[in-house]
Image (tube, rainbow, N blue to C red; front, side, top):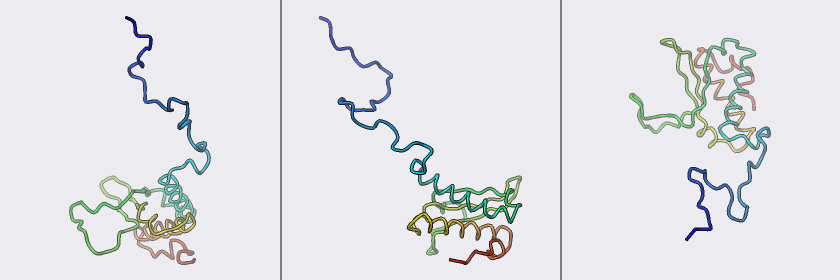
Length: 149
């Protein structure tokens, strides 16, 4: 007795649509529109915009790596939980052949802001403060418009 229905070929990927041809057909927005960017990508763009704004005034920032991390790590040696506020950014000076680094923590910044404009302002403030700390300057020296609303 022969089976009239052939089994699915082994090794095929998961079904993309249900048996009625409905379901996810493709991305909701084309990749070139801002809607397609993830929150992490949009946040990294805000940091990059802030850095580019400062590099016009401080060309030595090209020698610093700017990173975006999800949250600060508090589990390493010499780091302990405390009652202090969660940091929004941090710095690491250059040493042992490594470039200096400025880190901005995405989730703490996102939690403290409501909209894109407010987030962009806080990101720029954090970047300015961290660059000032790394260069040994005041934030107002790094960006004269630092404390303006």
